[in-house]
Amino acid sequence: MNDLPLRRGQLVTTFGPGSLVISPEGETAMIGALDKWYYDKNENRTEFLDEFEIQENRLRSLLRVNRLLMPPDYRPGYKYINSGDALSQTNTDLYIPLLRFPTWHYCPICKTLHQSDLSQRTSWMDCKVCKESRRMIQVPFVMICREGHISDFPWREWVHKDEHTSCDGQMSLITTGGATLDSLKVKCSCNKERSLKGIMTRKNNPNDEEEGISELSKKLNENGDLYKCPGHKPWYGSLSESENCFSNPVAALKNSINVYYPNTISAIYLPGKNAAVERLIDMFERYGITTSWLNIADRLDKKIEIIKKICPPEINLYNDSDIELAILYIEGELEDKDELERIYSNNTEKELRKKEFEVLVDGIEDTHLKVKKEWNSGSAVVNEITSKFTLINRVTKLKETIVLTGFDRLITNSEQSGRTKIEKGKELLFKNPDLQENNWLPAYKVYGEGIFFTLNVEKLISWEQRHDVLSHFNRLITRAVRSNARFDESILKPRNVLIHTLSHIIIDELALTCGYNSASLRERLYINDDDCGILIYTSSGDIDGTFGGLVRMGKKETFFPVVYQAIDKARWCSSDPVCSEIGKDSGQGVNNLNGAACHSCSYLSETSCETGNLFLDRTLLIDPQIGFFSSTN
Image (cartoon, rainbow, N blue to C red; front, side, top):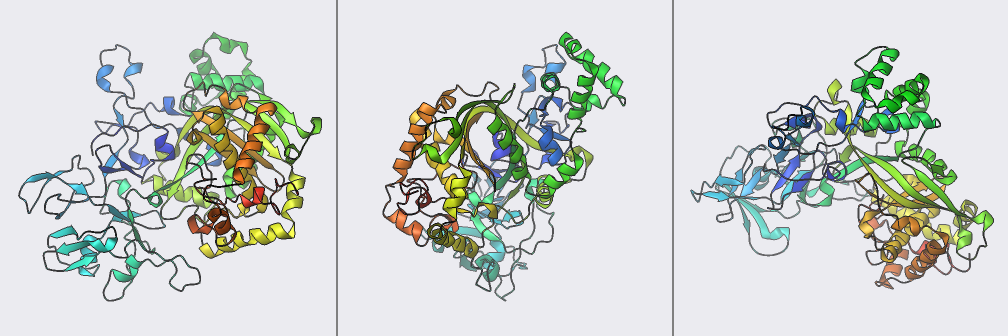
């Protein structure tokens, strides 16, 4: 596959191993498994990984990996070959593996189908019918299943209505004109042909005995046998290897969103209690002191000697006990093992956020996290809107680390949680996950700023226990159960949907007021039995973060007018009365999991929302009878 430039952050959040990326020329490639990352053009793996390591011990310990590594940046070797500096010549010509997928192509002239290799760099092939070399076009479909497998669409098996067919005739993909799959058909030189009708259809009704069985599984074989997923993982580098899979596959457009759902976990940097140790850890990160350096020596005093030789003279200002604690932190020896086991076995990210919430509420002044107290309800004059809030803090600087832990296909939010989900994710990302050198995960760090605020928990509990609120919300719960969708059930509370919707409308209003693109703003929800908080923040890959515009909007004299305006705008959607009426009746959005919420009023970009624009309902905010922010509450 031809070279394709990608940002390092994209390789963690959007285009991880197993994903499909489309080049400017329209060619589709698959990102290879993590086993083959950090190799150069001569197929040699680099031994200098320290510069890519991210120090975030909370995540590293929770995920049970030795390292968190940033994706490599590309440095052309010819620019450094005569530099005379051996250090600058390391880690040059490092590539991320790209594989051509789907491998089936069709001739733009005669429409005959041709299959290439995964490693083929160009789409030019010899057409067997035209007898000329032509630039082939990749087919638009792939086949996916819930277990994360992806395969070429079974063109030969489909046209012959037999997954065990022995015919090797020349096939062609013909269009008869039209915008539906009925207008596309595959034809074989043995005179058999078949339209593609139904290949993307799957049932999702739990009351149906055939729930989960796709039309592709049912109709591929003429004898009635169900067609099962072949279990291919082409991002491992081979089409011949497969594993047993009993899922029912379905065809999907190669650029469809359900082909790849990345699973990521993120954590905001939280400083420790010892300021001197924190400064030392920051120094270690700046000078590239990682576990591999520390493993050179087996005794702690020898490790301290090595560090004093590498670091600048200011290291002598610290005593050996602080340096020892910093070393133990880097090596992951300071964490409570029992506590880590409990968090790892449960909802990992939710447990991480409990500590973040405490720090964001209390405020802090640290190198990588600065939280300034702005307003609280105990020392302020309150009114109809402000009485619903309890706290506003301005986060002038934060550091967030995002780690790719796996991915899903076809559906998001798989049923596994905690340990099972993380281990399953590693098995998808690595071809050989049990090898010691593969005990790492890709990560990316970003710096930014934000606004943190909390709502009055007592008022929320009192409001959500009202009979009319529960009666309205039970319709959403019923639709969620019927949909058979996978999601975190903790969000199925009126206050959590309320908080999520409030976050969306405030982000939208902040984007209009302070000039940020709404896609650059993100939400981070802190919702459990005792906490109801929202962090709205912006982040970038630059170490200096952003320019303070969002933090200024966190001042009480500017934040509350933004809230007033956001709530007022939410009272009317340009799609009303349809949006509001459908929201109260049948619901809308994916699996009808939204109430009164659509693209015109509440949706944000995928990078901004934590739940994929699901579980939103303006009614809970502004309805005259049940709205939390209505004048009657």
